[in-house]
Every structure is written in structure tokens, then in C-alpha cells.
Image (cartoon, rainbow, N blue to C red; front, side, top):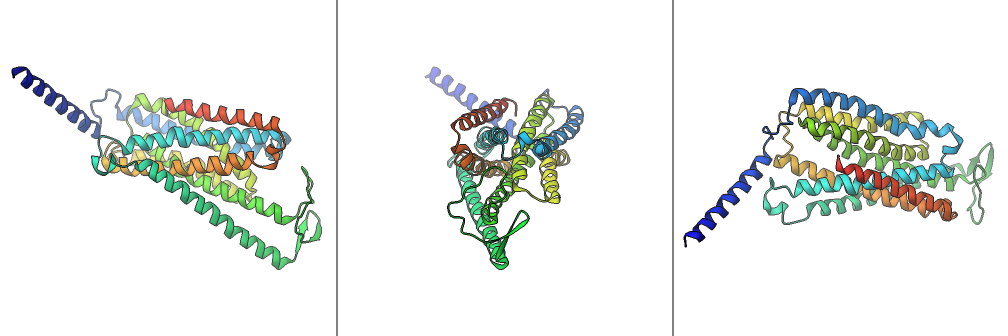
Length: 349
């Protein structure tokens, strides 16, 4: 009897210890020896500057190198580099954003009902992917109808320096730099590139602000240093993927600059916002966990959809890669390298 009471007492003490530990994790971790606000602030300011520069470099690189013939969008090297960047975006969704959402929405700081009784992360990511499909499809339809109405009003198509009557496009095939393609076919592909670039930027912007907010609100100098280093590589290569999409979209200079600006500024802005809200924003508070967790889940669904459907599937099922097994193999290797490298970085960020 006495031994049973002893066992029960030990069990109660153990449960009380676990509950106390769980509750302490939900508070600001003041007992963490790595927490040092005065030392963390300079690191975060340096992080803002470094991440801003690497983001600009990454997203601008495909646009700047357009003048290099080997890296023009119709060359094989561009396809391989884009496959590498697409692998990075895919791994960002699966290995960085989605696991973070699972951790947050399954946190012991949240009530069992409903957060531990339903897989909210998977549900929200699924809804986000479906919503992205809806936006992708509807936007393409709207732009296509506008484009067709303009072409119908004109009645003629300008091709290079010549004026040609509109044709149905049956059976003719043109190669490389031949400008004898009809405008309708070019316009349709161009519209797809533009929709893809806009939707992809939206997903990256949301997830970048969330990442920056977490870094800015943290005072843990032990994690800020490796996190900033990992984010630099992350922003560099993710920017290359977005930059390739912007290049293919053939936007005017003003819109290119705007898209580069918004991508480059989002993570530094998130860090600055986190610094400003560091007194009120608690990383482990239930409201923060729910908000950031749901945002991460929706961002993950969008990024995974875009990477698989609009980037990888569109390229690998397209005529260029379907026409060359050798180029397909090189592109597959690039995808695995990109996804593998970004997955490895999940150890630090």
C-alpha cells in the first residue's frame, strides 16, 4: 500500500513537473542563458542589411544575366537553373514552412480542443493549394479573354516588322529565335508566365514576413547568428527562382523593379516589425502560435502547389524538356540538388 502511494506521489509530481515545464515554455524564456536583448539587437540590424543585399542579388541575378546568351530563357542552361530554383521553392514549402506550422499548431501551449484533435496544418495547406488553383485558373481566364478581345478588335497581328492576318495556328512549328510565331500563341504563354510570377511572389512575400517576424522578436543570440546565415542562402536561391519567373513574364521595367523591391524588402521588414513588437509579441503565446501557424500552413500550400504545378510540371511536360531526355536528366539532377540543399538548411532555419 505504501509503495503504491509512493508511486502515485511520484507520478503526480512528474505530471506537475511536465505541466510546469509546458507552461514555462509558453512564457518568455527569461531563464535562457542565450537571451540577451542588448547583444541580439545589433545582430538583428546586421541581419536586416545582409538579408536585404542577398535578396536583391538573388532576385536580380536572372534579370541582369539576361544579356548573357547562355542564360537567356530559351537556352538549356536557363532551364537547368530554373529547375534548381524550383527544387528550392518546393523544399521551402515541405521542409521549412510546413513543419514550422505543425510545430506551432501542435504546441503544448495551445488547448487540446480543438488544436490537438484536428490536423489544422494539413487542412489549411490543402485549402490554400486549392485556393491557389482557383486564383491561377481564374486569373489566366480573365487575362486570356482580355487578350482575345483586343486581338479580335485589331483583326490583324503584328509579327516583328510585318503585319499578318490572324491565323488558327494549325500545324506550323517554329524554332528558337524565329519571330514568325503568331501573337496569339505567344500571348497565351506570356499570360501564364505573368500569372505564375504574381502568385509565386504573393506566397513568398507572406512566408518571408512571417520568418522575419520570428527573427526580429527573438532575443536568443545562439539561434539568431546561424538563422541569419541560413536565411541569406535561402533568400538568395529563392530569389533566383522568382527572378527567373519575372524574366519569363517579360514585364516592363517599372513592374520588374516593383516585384524585385517587394521580394527584397519583406524579410528585412518582418525583422524590423519583430523588433518593434518585441515587447508585446511573444513567440510562444497562444495567439502568436495560432496566427503564425495558420499563415505558415497557407503559405506552404501555395508554395508547394506553385513549385509542383506551375514550375516543375509546366517545364518538364513542356516541349523543350520532352524533346530531350539528356536535358530532362540534367534538370532532374538540378531539382534534387536544389531540394536537397534547402532541406539540409532546415537544420538551422
